[in-house]
Picture 1 (cartoon, rainbow, N blue to C red):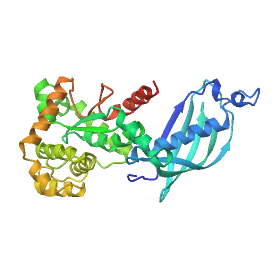
Picture 2 (picture 1 turned 120 degrees about the vertical axis):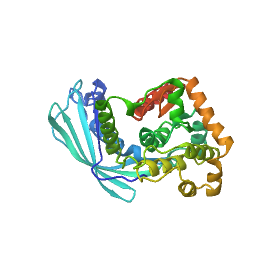
Picture 3 (picture 1 turned 90 degrees about the horizontal axis):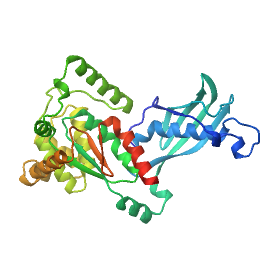
Length: 332
C-alpha cells in the first residue's frame, strides 16, 4: 500500500430507496433506513478514503464497527456518509464515521479495516483467467504532463478493482499537439493558467502527493519515453513509469540525464545499462512514434488519455468516470 496519512477522508452521498428500509428486511411498519444499510454506506466511505493507495492485488476489508445510531434517516432524501482515517497500525486502518441527513446527525462511531491480498478471496486460476480475458486499459502518457503523474499514481488501483490489465503507451505529447494543432494550456490566458496550476495542486493535495514544477521545467522527455518503451517490453512499465513521474514532479530530478534514468531503471528492476541503451535506440524511438500515430488516428488530443472497452477518457479527473463505465460494462 502506498503511504496513507491520518486525516484522509471520503464523503459518500447517496439517496436511499425503499429497499434500504428496516421494513424491507422484515421489521414491518418501520419505514426508515435500516441500521445495517447505513453501516454499509459508512464502510463504503472508508474504503473510498484509501482505495487509490492500493497496490496491485490489494484491497481492504472491514473487521470491526462500533456505531451509535442517533436518529432516523428517511428514504428518498440524500444521506451523507463521511469516513476519516485516524490511524494506521501495520495492516490495520482505523476510521471515524459520521452519517448525516438534512443537517441532522444520524449515526457516528468508529471502524477498522485490514489490508489484504485480493487473491485470498478467489481461486487464483479463475482470477488470472478473468483478467486475461478482459481488454486492457490503454494509458497514453508523457512525462511532460503533471496530470499524467497524478493519473499514474491512481490507475493501477482502479485497474485492479476493475480486474483489468494496463497497456502503457508512452507518446511525445509536444509532437502530438503540433500534429493536430492542439490545445497548449500554459499558453492560454493568464487567468486560465492561474486556475490550471491551482487545480493541479488541489488534485495533488486530494491524492496526498507532493507536486512541484521542476526548476528547469520543461525537461526534454524523449530519452525517458524511449526507456519507458523498453520497460513496457520487459514487463516493468508500472514500476519504471511511476518512479520516473515521481522523479520529475516530486523530486526535481533531471529525467533527461542518463545517470538518473539508469538509477530509476535499476530501482524498477531493470538492467540500468539496458535502460541507458534503450534511451537512444531507434527501435524504441519508433515504438514511441507508433504510439503517437495510433493516438492521432484514434482522436487523442492530450494526455493523460485512456481507452477502456474502446471508449476514450481524457484527464486525471475522468478516472472515476472510466471506472464506473467499466463496472457497468462488466455487469452488462
